Image (cartoon, rainbow, N blue to C red; front, side, top):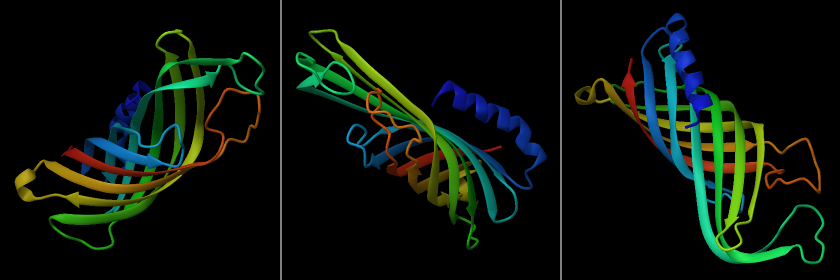
Length: 211
């Protein structure tokens, strides 16, 4: 998780007692995603969320996460961006790394009540940023780009396991479908790989502590 995201969560921790009506939870989670972007096919990472109850069946959640994808291969790549020109290529053994950072606010509703396993469904609104870097083992050449933050929307289905024997711990398993909007700024010669809208499916497992 990024430092900025952690600072947001710590600030919200101080504010939540004024708005919550029931329990609060702070959780750390691991995630595995699949996206439709070729340079970020299956990022995995970690995150944290802070959740509070607005009513008996409504939850407000603030989350921050970072996910990484890495690859290594031999290939011929272009040095720069934009239109190619003669000699603008390098062949090497490349180490490629990409990561995705997300900060999101979500509302979750519980359609039915259970003492042990609760199902929550809802949606979220957030900001997503992307970063890409490639470095050559022999040439030492480095090429990188950043994109974002951009607006993102998500749908969430969350299974909460709150067995009395686990107290004060709670387990969460959720599935999230997210769409990050395309950039409004278009430039053929700019160094970016993430101009278009990006969809991702995320599976996460969290261990939460009741506050």
